[in-house]
Length: 121
Length: 144
Image (cartoon, rainbow over all chains, first blue to last red):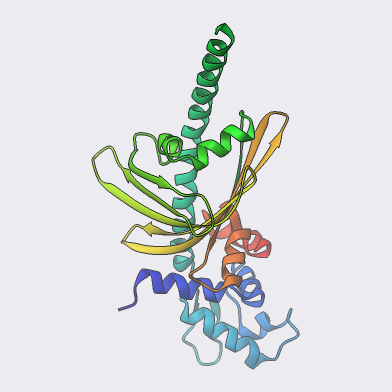
């Protein structure tokens, strides 16, 4: 069984390459053929196919079944898992920062009180 | 992931709030949470140990190791973060403190270090766009 953590690792590794990110960006506009995908890159079809295989293994893209024309399309589900992780982390810190804001106000008013006492002595 | 926040307090105070365990325990975690355990030894190799407690009593322990500590300026720690489904993730968190006109700008960067460094960089640049819808993916990825 593949754990969520392993899947996330695979997703992140697949996203680590700028060519693969460019391919995903292109696919965000709609499904297309490998030939079309290869056009903007100075790369052979087999090289592009290699990148597609990595993306496919990571579950980030799906390929059509037809032998003639196997269009690639984006599958955003694995990205969503990464997004959830990052979102959760961000929410945690946003919430903590709200409290830190209040706590700093409290700290400052305590310091002022202490300062006034100091002056009286 | 990067997040920036300006606090209306001098840097020295903000630094204290981040590094003195008694103070850190006062604000770490979402509203309603408490921190029954909070130990901080802010020096390279020192341990930060916090157990957060949710209002329903559930406890969430967290341990981090300080990697870099530049007083008043920079705090770097490595930690593992629990993800729903009990998956933990290695995260390197870089926090910097800059004072401007009596206010303090805190910048927090988190890198996922369990994946390749390149992947962590990509994540770092993608910021909140991760909470994306498909039509935003294009802009998001080109930024990464």
